[in-house]
Image (cartoon, rainbow, N blue to C red; front, side, top):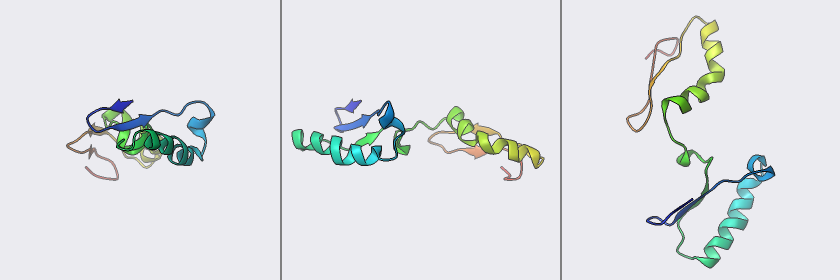
Length: 98
């Protein structure tokens, strides 16, 4: 995906590259270098999985918090995501308060 206004490029690495720990190095030292050699004024080159390229919404936050939901429940609490996005996320009841 390329954004013409900013000249930023967001890459999706698939197959073995998508889960390889060295894929960030491959992207920065290989792909980004080649792109910048060809187009020196290109913006940033990032992965679609980088935090700045992720959408913050209730579903994404719930998925991220899913693994600790069971622990919170066993402690007698609840964990509810009431909102997420640019205005920030507010937590619901449970041990963390809200």
